[in-house]
Length: 229
Image 1: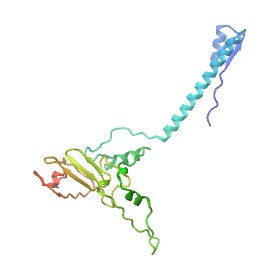
Image 2: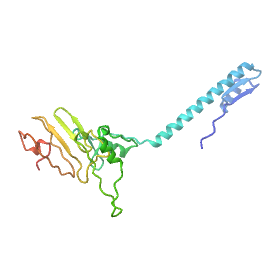
Image 3: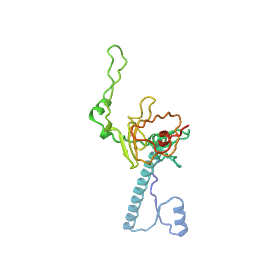
Image 4: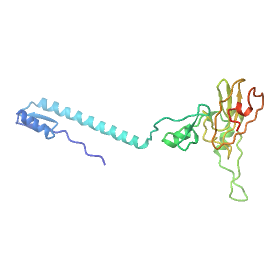
């Protein structure tokens, strides 16, 4: 329960000494009028009191709104270590996470899926309908959702033309976070003479296939930025 608003108190008295006025205001009065007084002056001072009470009520409501907002907000402070290539954030346990996943886990912010408008209608329908029931029992049957190549996340950085089947880097779709143990499935076209700098991945086994072209220097694994060890 909120506190009752403090009334606006006007002293109307015959005591006109300066000490009396100071004592009255010090005792909690908001205004002080000495008798005899003009009605117009008293009316004007009462109107001032109404305005002060309205301002106090508006300020109190604003304070309540800010307090309610603070109870729903968590703050992210400090610097976030972000990989410049995969755009992931290293958490406190030294694991790499999607930026959206990290922020959602450390605040009340929520991200809307990107690139969902490019998904074919049959894919969206397949995601929306529940799994079909097996007539031989209660176990649901698996539903195969067709995902066409053009529905993948796509970015062209000039030296790198890349397609992402699952959420990766700047592409985020919470419904496409991987398949079982498979976390990333990318199709990369790297310009000649370019490549990824050497970088590590924790608790990941990376398989790379060169479909076209060859590495002019070093192994294909090194060309893709993965140590040979």
